[in-house]
Image 1: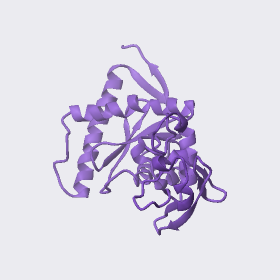
Image 2: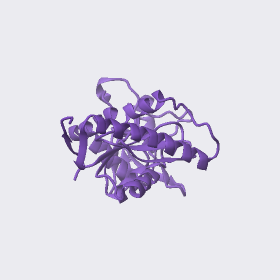
Image 3: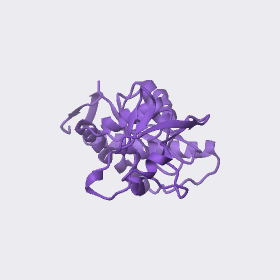
Image 4: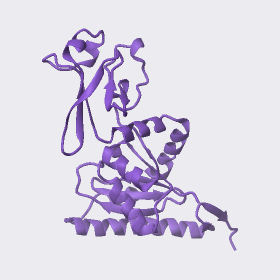
Length: 257
């Protein structure tokens, strides 16, 4: 059985998961977090509570690119496709054919000894780790000062060596980055624009542009009604057009009687 969902943000603090078949909203939740970097776990929980299971596939945009989200997906066993965040994606322009600045993706991560290696071969070791899991890696100032890429790499006004900032989920970041570079992953993620994006427009075109109440509980209730109204329209359209769904992802169109 194949089921594919899209997780995406709708309006600042509201999140929904959309079925790939009929654009039915199968789960939703609201949050007071400032961004999407903690929202995959609540989305998976909402999916489990609503449908009684987790999807086999899930995709989300790069707003969800975070170590915590990637770990939640790893633990869930869902086949996930999360767009790589800017700077962590392999640059399209090679270093030796341009004067562009070096990004994190230009440095090779080695999980075995937990280090990064720069394009010129210098090893950046971990200098500190915070309680929240964030990590800082840095090279040697004297080596960076003699590097031919120094002006394109080091940004410190004090002449300090290049640093790389990440977290303790870097192996998961590397795995997802490599996965999203494959053609198969691009095909799966490419479906997102025809699954979840239209739902945004349909809800907004129905007149919903923002919440009319205050407080998380009331906002959650209003958003539930908005999602239910959207689903009723989708179901009614499926009935009118004779589209039935005897099995998940197995569609049959019946002639009108």
